[in-house]
Image 1 (cartoon, rainbow, N blue to C red):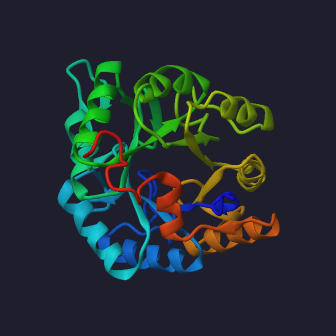
Image 2 (cartoon, one colour; image 1 turned 90 degrees about the vertical axis):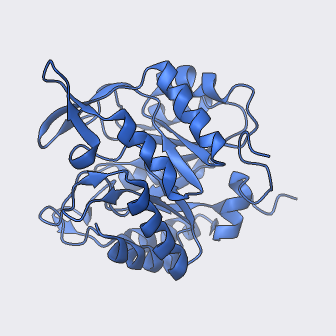
Amino acid sequence: MNTLRDKVIVTVAPTGGFLTKADHRYVPTQPEEIADDVARCQAAGASMVALHARRPDDEATCDGEIYRRINDLVRARCDIVINNSTGGGVNGDMVRTRADGTRIVDWVARLAGLDGGADTCTLDAITAYISSPSGEVLMDTPPSRAAELAAAMRARGIAPEWEAFGPSHLLQEIRTLTAGQPGPHLVNMVLGLDRTFQNALPYTPEILQNMIGLLPDDAVFSVSISGAEQMRGLTHALLLGGHVRVGIEDSPCLVPGEPTENVRFVEHIVGIVESLGLTPATSDEARAILGLDRVGSIEGTE
C-alpha cells in the first residue's frame, strides 16, 4: 500500500520576481520577512517553498549569499523543502543590455542562484520574451545552456524542478534532459502566463490534461496557475493526481482587487485539498515523494 498516494505537496511562492511593495502590500522581499512569512505558511500546511531573492533595494537577484541568508533563516524557523529560482526576475542583477539594445536575463546571474544551498532549484530550459513593466526581456536558454544548468545542479546535489509552460517544453527540453537520469523528476506546469511569457499557455482543462499526458517517465508533477482560473485549475490538478502551488508570485488576490497574504492562499488551497479527501503532505512526506529523503537519490550524486 502506497501511504503517500493521497498526500499533496502544497508549495507556496511568496515573492516572485515582479511585484514590489508598491504593487502589493503583503509581498515579502527581504530575508527576515520572507522567512517569517514562510514559517506562517508552513504552519498552515505548505511543505515546499519556491523562493525568489531580492536586493536591499527590492530589485531582483540570484546572489548566492542572499539566497543562503534567506534559506538559513527559513530553516531556523521551520522545516520545509526549499526551492530557489534560477530565473530571478526582470530587473536588478538579473538583466543586462546587449549591444543591439536587447534586454536579456543574464546567464551568469542565473547560475549564481545555485549557490544558496537549496534542496531544489527551478530549471527553466526555455527561450522566450517576457513582458515586464520595464519592457521586453529575453530569457535566452539554448539547449547547450539548459544542459549546463542541469549538470551544474547535479554536481551540487540539487534536484531540478523543471518548469513547463507548454507541451513543447515537455517534449523537447525536459524529455531530452531527463532521459537516462534517475527519477523522480519534479515538473511544475506553469499556466496562465500567456500574457507575460511568449508561447506560454492559459489554463483550460484540455491543455492541462494534454500536458499531463506528455510528462516524462517517473515524473512528479505540480501545477501553478495565474489569473482568474487559478483555483478551478488547481482543483483540476488535484483530481488528476498532481501537487499544487499558490502564493503572491502566482496571483496577488483571492478576491479580485483585494491583496491577499500568502498564508491565506495556503489555508484556502489546504481547504480544497482536504475537501477532496486528500491530505497536505508534511515536509518529510514531500521529501519522500520527491526522492530527497534517500541518500544519493538526487540526480547524479553519490
